[in-house]
Length: 459
Ligand SMILES: Cc1cc2nc3c(=O)[nH]c(=O)nc-3n(C[C@H](O)[C@H](O)[C@H](O)COP(=O)(O)O)c2cc1C
Image (cartoon, rainbow, N blue to C red):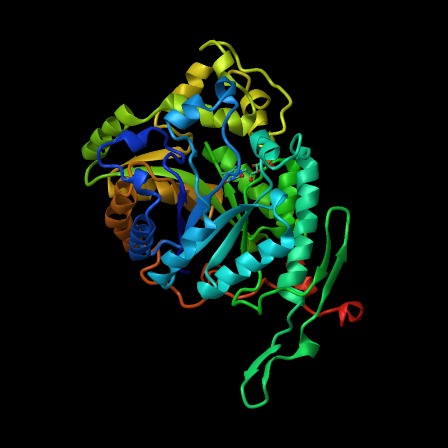
């Protein structure tokens, strides 16, 4: 039997400090060039050289202002501020690559589904079907206020809204234009056949939409759907919609449990549990030998900022850690941020302090970190996959682009020699590559139910 293939996305963001905070100050780091298109096209070319499945781009639309009740450290350390739009990077990167996928984070709370549907379809066309969407609803009060709301919608309500948003999108992407609607027949002067293009009428609790999807069907129609929530409500949402789930596992036992929960949730939604791929965030520091890798880690640690990492985490949880003494236990507070992160910190465990958080964020971020020779890194990655049921990893950057180049030059060949990593890309769209099936949503996915237009919606 062929071995399970490890899937790898680069994890990045259109900003200077993404996860491993402080490393922008390292002399070899180039992340301050993020406003240049060459920075992104060079990255895309490298990732395709390393046969990465995709570039996963995180995004937020607010600022991290919880720590110390302000943005001073956020600005000084460039903790995801300034941050540019992720979608606008893609056309250029797609132009210099053929296979690399693009996982784009976009927050649905602040943008009408009708406009968003067009932007994603446009990119799916321009990339020939290489687009994925990381569905987020936001967790920052600063974003809500900037958008004219007094506060964010409450946690579970955000997911209710997201469910309905997706219903609208499926109808626009899957139902509005039938297959074969576009003839582009010059002789008959028919570009699109009117009887095959349908107006969508949706009147729900949150959205009212009456209109035709503005784009003709793109290769995947619905982009590959990513999601990253792990509260009970988040898991129910993932089970219904997500084709890929992104988790931030800390240890193998908890990760195994989380992967199982994702698959159970998909099964409850009537889907094949293995139609969902689960990716874990991972940091790797690799060098030719273990000693060299340890030296590199020590060097990186001198530039990393644990405090900036903790400040980032303050906004993830909504808890201002700057108010705590170093050894004071962190207490539960009800916040409207990432519920699972608050629970892990204060309910599932009760002995967290700022001192421990800083130690956890020594490299500026809290993703699990593997340091070693190519052999050691590959051993560790394989053991995570084998022991937890994970499908792959979202690889953070440390010193940029050095860390991805190291991974590509050193670790990829080792994984390939073990038969657990591709030696060439499969043809076709991102969905086809990832699932070795069709370009479109599989038939048992809730979005596929929209495909045959009901009579009532025919124009
Ligand atoms: C690994 C991981 C990555 C995430 N990335 C983003 C992101 O880029 N932008 C964002 O707005 N939210 C992001 N989130 C937040 C989630 O989308 C979601 O809002 C959050 O996990 C709250 O859901 P929960 O309470 O169900 O866990 C991320 C969450 C996790 C666990």
